[in-house]
Length: 106
Image (cartoon, rainbow, N blue to C red; front, top):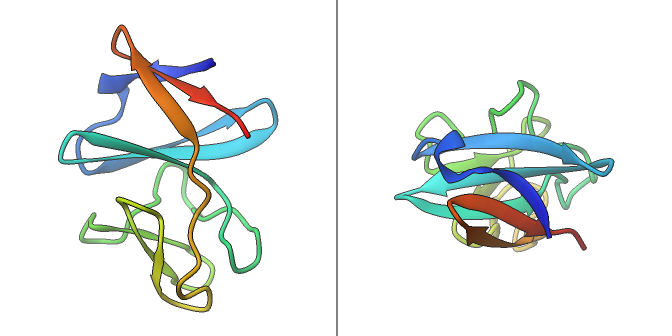
């Protein structure tokens, strides 16, 4: 497992991107629950954000791809609107140990 960051490094209703071993991932916290995904849109395989750490739409309720505006549910990464409808972001397994997020890269 690889240590990502402290749980408090990601504020509620916010997101944060990381590069670990050459892979781009991001974490989102919603209602104090964390979700970690590979930073790759299922449509074209591009990174989702145009601005660092900006993975959410304006309402902070959905993950948004900056290229084509695809929208994904935070809780499971499922695309609900856009060119990759019904496809999902790839989930990254994680555990919280001593208030630090530890991930398992695929």
